[in-house]
Image (cartoon, rainbow, N blue to C red; front, side):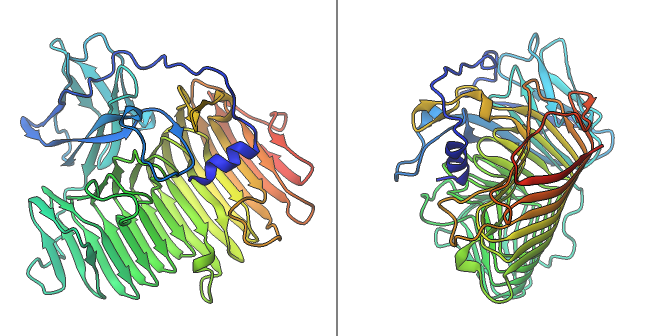
Length: 480
């Protein structure tokens, strides 16, 4: 069960209030196809399942009901300057509101006389979502760099190569030191990847790693432990069974241009960085049904050499969060320190509870965390329910949240501290109100030295008079 549920319960946001959809009409029909044509050539559009509503429960061994899911679409192609991209949707887009997110990219969706959509001003390799008549049944577009991994020798004994077509490898792929798994464009690999006590491994390509054939307890799509010098680049990961990529007790890890979609199952986190340091997560797209990018300290991984989590750089990532938190530290914080964490130029298109969240529930001292150039758009809260009970929208759409608290994930009675957290150039443009919350636990488990500069909520820059939420264990909040 997601940690976010417990925190929500502790914050008492459960409610019996009715929550009804106002955005469900005129969305793409889930039983019809979408087509995409690039420079006159059709490209493949894949269908997958995503969460329809933010509805969750404590895990009882029974997966989500199909009524809580819907069809979504995704496509990939290489970027070329000035290319013509046209989209056809069921029933046409004429008369429907077409939105491309992140809006900060400036991509326009122009509806033609026949109801097709032409995309204009694609700025370069990037990822974005086209919404037609609302956010349901959206089209996810992954525009890749044009290079084709020239450093990969497909005939090398150290390269495990899967070419175009469908491949079933039910026992998983266990990478050894120096090996490269290359999932080429047009390939769909039904499998998962394991690696432990290795160095110099790569998972590359423009194909799809698909876990739709596996049950929740069978695997993680990517599970790498006790390893160094890891690169995951270019692939699409579809339909994770649980957490998508768990990286534990590792160093020197790079995620670049990785796309995650099809997260509809319970606890479908994105990237879980567990007692791991020296990590770069750049140019990635994650749509998750639970936290997107998560930095954790977990008791099984709290060991010599991994008691400090540091030097994690998240940059130029596009996020859609269907339950939980978008950029998350915690809630499990079994570490001595979590420090030197940077989030820069990240675009949170859709989210549920909090866009930027730190939950310190154990002993870690969390400090020197820097957020800059973060663009946050629309919260999702309609028809939200937990364990069959409808939830109040008040607990959704938080911009900044830091909390020190005991929880079911605490392993000791000692609570940690949080200090020296900076937020610079933060832009929220959602149609629902938002909040900033700081909640310490005790004098020796407090929150202090928070700097907020140029934080704009719906075009208005907040100042020292902004009504943020705090308790008595919070000090030195500087807003300018």
